[in-house]
Amino acid sequence: MKTSMTLVAAALFAALSVSCASQLGGVSSMRGADVAASDKAPQAMPDYVGKKPGLQKNIARTFPTQPPLIPHAVANFDEISLQENQCLSCHGPDKYKEKNAPKLGDSHFKDREGKQQAASSASRHACVMCHAPQVDAPPLVENTFKSVELPVKK
Ligand code: HEC
Ligand code: HEC
Image 1 (cartoon, rainbow, N blue to C red):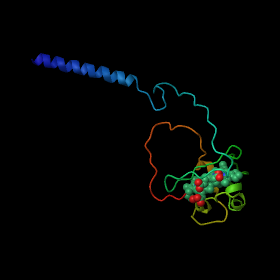
Image 2 (tube, rainbow, N blue to C red; image 1 turned 45 degrees about the horizontal axis):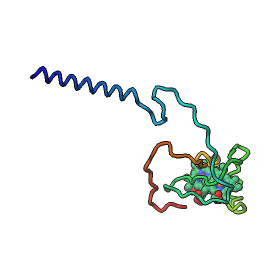
Image 3 (tube, protein in one colour; image 1 turned 180 degrees about the vertical axis):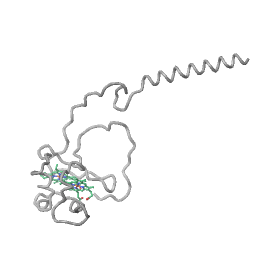
Image 4 (cartoon, rainbow, N blue to C red; image 1 turned 90 degrees about the horizontal axis):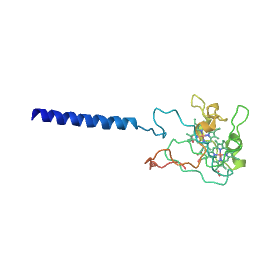
């Protein structure tokens, strides 16, 4: 009796080890390749979506401190350099009225000490560091994210 119990236990252990090993061998990562394989070349970047500024609605924000997403095309004015920033030529404080564009957020006029100033802060110069243009792409992995239900500024 004792021997047969030991044999059964040994057989179970062996079966378990085999099934674990075969599962480990087939581990695949979220990027779709075997963990041990080298990275796949990235897919070609799809074009940004959106038409000329002035033709679309703003995209609803999903949490209170979110930098709003860019709803319009950026193809011809996404180059931001020391000399040039075309985003400011529509959204800047001296241009937004004439261009009928939303003005930079109030927070963009605070200096490092939090004091309000007339010109937009240099720390906000690289707009696309926070504001993302949009592409038509499915989510990389399924998720169940739901927008907060707080009153979010539109
Ligand atoms: C030719 C003028 C123009 C230029 C250049 C421009 N925008 Fe806009 N932007 C607009 C207008 C007008 C809207 C209102 C939505 C619409 O009609 O597309 C807007 C909307 C936005 C919004 C949404 C604001 C909100 O409250 O939801 C963001 C963010 C934004 N733009 C960022 C940028 C950034 C960053 C750049 C530079 C890469 C840029 N824009 C360049 C005119 C412009
Ligand atoms: C460090 C991150 C950051 C950078 C850089 C930044 N923004 Fe923003 N932006 C935000 C956040 C967060 C908000 C929403 C809260 C607020 O209004 O400050 C916002 C709001 C806005 C709005 C909507 C304002 C409103 O009244 O609803 C516009 C338009 C905008 N930004 C344009 C720009 C442009 C153009 C630039 C570049 C010159 C820029 N932002 C740089 C984070 C950023």
